[in-house]
Length: 357
Ligand SMILES: *[C@@H]1O[C@H](CO)[C@@H](O)[C@H](O)[C@H]1NC(C)=O
Ligand SMILES: *[C@@H]1O[C@H](CO)[C@@H](O)[C@H](O)[C@H]1NC(C)=O
Ligand SMILES: *[C@@H]1O[C@H](CO)[C@@H](O)[C@H](O)[C@H]1NC(C)=O
Image (cartoon, rainbow, N blue to C red; front, side, top):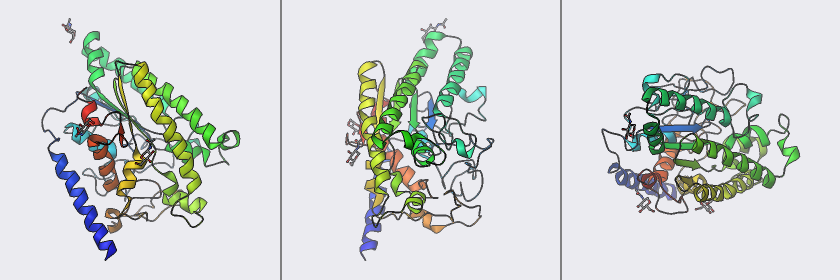
């Protein structure tokens, strides 16, 4: 009975958010001329498919709810980046850097790569991945190309300044770095507090590089509660609690330091607008009613084992595999980042107001 009520609450809640939302979806011309995506597997749309790494999702059951099926997205359906793209009014999903052609680069590129991090070495034990520094370098080459194609420096500068840029990275600097002490030295060198500090400092420099490449509307996603991911729970145990509290504590240090960094970037670059999205806060609002049971059978590394079976659990679970959120969670985070009213959720701007500034 209680469960029934919770599910009812959830579906009413979701449909309210959905209706609220439709009025912002404008068909035809997108609300920004271009949209660039940086990050890890939370927003990767196929950049890892040709890399030599175990960190790939180019097989079923990934993509079972995605219109084009298997693409290299690490979830059942759309990513946060895809849903934000729809809200912005783009008719097509922003193509991955790995396959984009000159014809499409002016509308935006998705540079995100599963397993990658703020730090260069993050994820290296699994093989190839495109670190945030490399993603920025790839963006540099795309921007140069756009300058060349548009043939008007003033125009291209203004153009790049009107685009939306999102950055969703940092989880692997924990999952596939700090929390893997046999492969990486960071946990031997730093406390979680010190680690958050150096990570955020490096991240801040990278966000400044994005600014130097012409970005003026930049959305920075905080980290979700990694300690609640089923794969981390099975590695570390919870001592009776619902999540691995020590990991969530480490993530909280990171988020608490990231938000003031975003404020600093705004203060020092008055011609730019950066905003912070509180993913932890937003996803805990949705926690009620959803389980944290993975929707697929897990491999030992926390990804789905290959299968054509479609799991009904995915509509009531927060997680698709051991780490990645289901589409239903992505929808919630994307929409809230777009329409949030509370500065606790999006600060200082939600995306809807950011693109109008
Ligand atoms: C270059 O772009 C600017 C800004 O859009 C415009 O005012 C100017 O006329 C353009 N110059 C040329 C040569 O087309
Ligand atoms: C995120 O939101 C939660 C709950 O709303 C809040 O407790 C937390 O302080 C927020 N985090 C940041 C970094 O703003
Ligand atoms: C976005 O933020 C602004 C300013 O806080 C607020 O007025 C607005 O209702 C929010 N939502 C949308 C969809 O603009």
